[in-house]
Length: 321
Image (cartoon, rainbow, N blue to C red; front, side, top):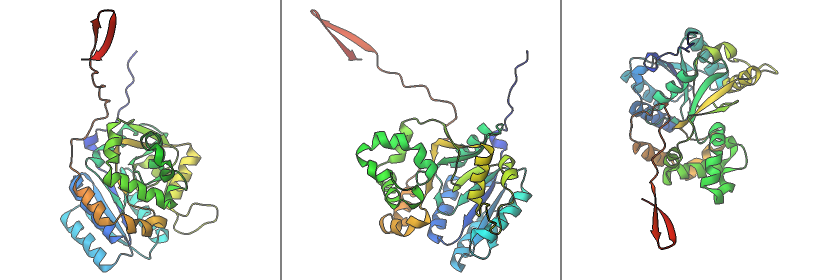
């Protein structure tokens, strides 16, 4: 019998659409754009849509300078302030126009890292033939999925600090926000995690959409996003996506070896800014250096030293060579 092979698109042939959502966190947006330009070949995107939701004049000037540097960038002004109806209306129009494209959605307080897009596209490509895994997302420590994936690592690595990373949901857990950022900035948590050679993918049945990649397999389930409150139906894009995951028994692939940073959820932002200022986060991202993107192939386990047996009279000792 002939062998059945699953055809997947080549990574180099995938040119996604980027939707970047920004509103009131101008300093976060500045760092977001800085990281995008440092760590991304932005020409890889077919289009870059910046959804500017009731931004200030200074904020818009920053966006305009970014768009002027990139021919594929377009600013969409979304008024009034809020996801519903302004931002969701813009998203609906973009998704309708790009139903056959791959979509990357990014929030203004997400700071990408070296090779993030290569990893994200590879994660998408790896699952593009599957009907049950319809999104991929990097590992984002300050997010519910990130906290879930890191659970065993945190338990083993920081057993005496368990009270710092368990408790209320991440979205409202200001203790976890501060603790995680201190570990990332000052104790090399990301490097320690990656040195453990974590699994390529973890699969969850829910997602936080700070940084995600998807295509029409999901779009056709959620489009259009709500543009007015309707009793009994989701009121945000994230709720709509998670409802679709639940109803369709679908899953999300969390990339174990690609870490992207989310600054904070709004309930914790004021507290976090008082302890982890944006300047410190900026210096951390400036210290990141691009490395060749890792492939999906598992690296071989390191060779362990050979064992030698030394004899002395009737005694035997085993030592490592």
